[in-house]
Length: 203
Image (cartoon, rainbow, N blue to C red; front, top):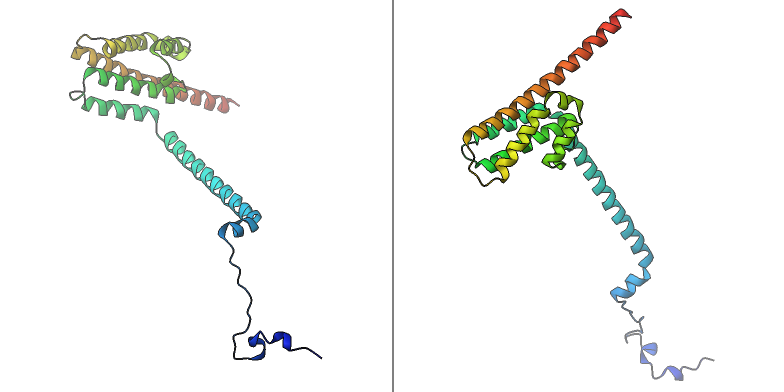
């Protein structure tokens, strides 16, 4: 027979109106929860980082591709002409030194894009050496470009006053170079196309 006397000191076991003995609520700290779920949290965090990195590189590659497409769609010849025209409009506003710096930059950008030469990375002397080693330039434009670089350096680095005639001469030289090289290349390409068509007709 069960002994109820042992429960006499626990009235809630005898009297149903007394609050029953419920389970003890255990509260876990944030760090305990974190440690218990460390593996899953690590996996999810790593997956999130990978997704962010992949998204970043896809977006960067897309922007780079769009930039290259835009650059390729711009004709270096037209770009140079527009830049020279814009610079001419500012001739009275700019001092000789920044004017010639900008003119030299326009010419070098044109050479770099039109002829795939690292013109922007070269010093004046290196630029002339590169020109001299290229048959297209050495036969037709070496003297002109050498004078352009020499005169331009004199304006950019000399303390002497620069005459307007010097600026006009540099401007005319750059404009002639851009127009004449473009015409010469177009003539060569046209002659090549005509030769190909003639050979095709003979066959």
